[in-house]
Image 1 (tube, rainbow, N blue to C red):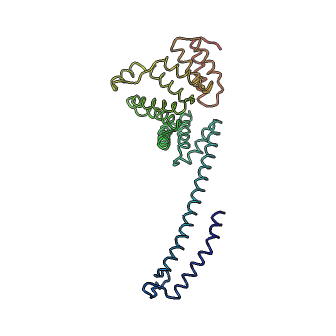
Image 2: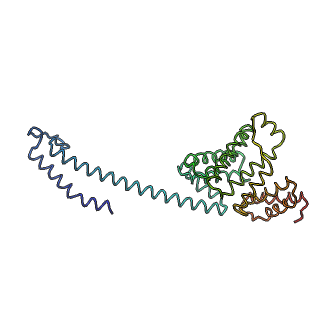
Image 3: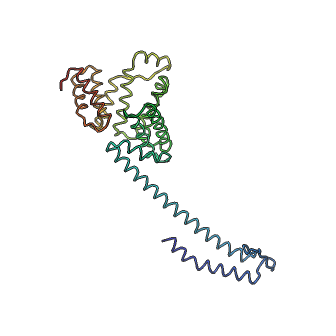
Length: 314
């Protein structure tokens, strides 16, 4: 509407400019008093005419530029609104446990430059790779795809805690295919990105939980792997079950009962620390956690087996 109004206001001036140009052609105004007219009528080389024509071209150029700006701004607003809609749909599907539908939705935007879309696509790709129905070949492909999406998300927005978190998670998955040297070497990078995620969002229980997993993994590392690590690295990553417990407790405090696996690992860590009473308490919570996902079902199964191993009949 604003553009149309401007055009209406400018049209009389444009008409006057055209009329002046026609008059100049007829009267023969040109340099040194003589007319110099291109036969196709595209240019008249007279001072007054060139000046007037310059005004006309400038006016039209201005309008063209403003039109371009308005269209561009409209496109940006539309694009932003569209991204917001996609993110809302994605979060709804994720919350509903519709992993396959979520992946199908986000896979359409794999060339996106938006970090929020990309880290969600990384998460969806990884979730599909974790399904028992996914073949080994598909799993590997999805793991590497997830890592690329997470890496791109981080490149697009280094201040996104979720991008740091999913980059760390996907990098860890890559290690399963790259050998023990790469896996251990990546461990330092993984922890650094998880710590950055927590720095950016101290309330993100998932990032805190994953550092707990990191600590637990290195605390229970088999002797052979520990020896290899010492051979490969002057100072290999190390941790303790006490440190792992601290992070699992922190995660639970940040968001109580947020994740079945955190409950399971609290039980497993207490078992490692020879505290069967507290181990049983947390394992029972893991067993009774509502199973919304395939991972929840696996957690329930492991919790039941561990409870049997310590003689709990519940």
